[in-house]
Amino acid sequence: MQHTSYIEISKSAYQQNLQFLKEDIDPKTQISMVVKGNAYGHGIEIMVPLAEENGIRHFSTFSSDEALRVYEASQHQSQVMIMGMLQNEDLEEIIRKGISFFVFEFDRLEASIAAAKKLGIKAKIHVEVETGFHRTGFEWEDKEWLAHLLDENTDYLELKGLCTHYAGAESIANYVRVRNQIKNYKKIKKWFDSQEIKFEKYHTACSAATLLYPETKMDMVRLGIASYGFWPTQETYMYRFQSLPEDNKNPLKRLISWKSSIMNTKAVKMGDFIGYGSSYMAPRDMTIALIPIGYGHGYSRLLSNQGKVLIRGRVVSVVGTVTMNSIAVDVTDLEKVQKGDEVVIIGKQRDKEITIASFSESSQQVNYELLTRLPHDIPRRIVE
Ligand SMILES: *Cc1c(COP(=O)(O)O)cnc(C)c1O
Image (cartoon, rainbow, N blue to C red):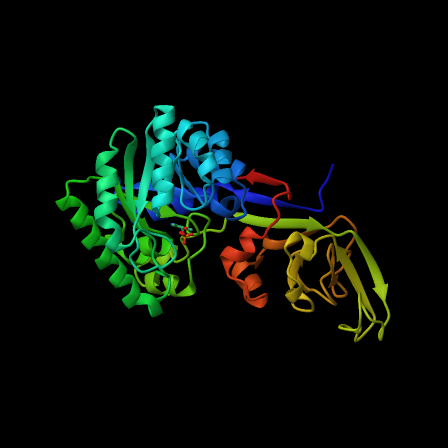
């Protein structure tokens, strides 16, 4: 059965991104590919084997359900790490499968120790510490009790990591806050050192930190958005622009394209309203094409009368409101448009391109949001 649209993932773009990012990363520093949010909308089952083909052996997810999907999709016994949600009742299965996870509060720590005791298998934990993000992480005041528990339960715990997350390394406005976090992290690390509690890996960096704050890279970097070919923000790109070689000013390549096809075309008379309500009245005799994607597929209603797509190598505009399952676009000035023609919603067609950035700006979303809202059931396939 054909779907109303499909997503293509470019293998060569991924390889180029990885190559560019690796130039910045010491070979001894492990890359963990962040695949939360269904691999930023790209599809976990697509991205895990593709990353493994390119040497990646560590993946990070938000939750345990995603971690199990990575575990199933892996063909190389890659390590899987849960950075967020995990119910205590799922701990046993996660520990049995050798999946590691962040621990940021005593309840989870105690439950992990209990589960590990019962199974006779060590729980692989990453101790997350509060440095200034103020969402999750053990407080400085917790350190003695925490150290005591870690020390007392070495038979049940494998200390895989000591970690934290930065509160907006992608924006210079947060510079002071991030600097303070780095300082706080170092202080905590030093304190654990003084207690002779060692962790296998010290890790703090996301994409933006990796690109802008070299000292945050340590033993492992957790790369999300940049691996998918997006600068975390325009600022991050500007910051790095000067140092990029003349012949490669655009080293991060988007992996994703989103395509559909024309469902039907229709002639509309001047003065007719197009679609629901009266948001668009034809200013001349027009031909419109209907495309079978709408807000139900992640194409925001805010793109009503705003969005652009590519047909026959030309940029054409959405006319009228975005509905649940379709949009109408103005193809009056295109020759020989017909049912079945390819429509590019995100990506390239001939020499034209609709970038996610332009698309998400007009719908006031950031890249991260638009990508992860792409429905899971749109078929995805890898292309060269
Ligand atoms: C999402 C996330 C990352 C990756 O962030 P990017 O900006 O996409 O590179 C790293 N660490 C944690 C804890 C995260 O939640």
